[in-house]
Every structure is written in C-alpha cells, then in structure tokens.
Image (cartoon, rainbow, N blue to C red):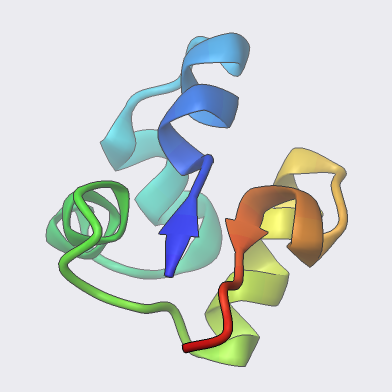
Length: 65
C-alpha cells in the first residue's frame, strides 16, 4: 500500500521521530511505512490520518490487487 506520509510530514516540517512519538510507534516504523516496507494497521492508519487532520484515504492509497 502506498502512502503520502512523507509528503504530509514534510509539509508540517516534523521529523520522523516527532511523528512516531505522536502516534506511539518507533521511528523505524515510520521509516518502514514511508519506504513501503510495512503496511499500517487500521488503528495506526487512523492515528496517522487524524494527526494530519486528513481522511485515511487521503494519506494511504489503497490499490486492489
């Protein structure tokens, strides 16, 4: 699943560490999400989208296989 986490994060000028603390995960999780190596759980996707003030669909780009 692709996402726009890095884009949203850069627009707010926050670090990966800052975002990780806000959504209660490790910095490594944010790195893996941004690099497409890890798909967020629904709960984490919700937390991230809420933090950015956006809908989940705007941050996470789901493509049916």
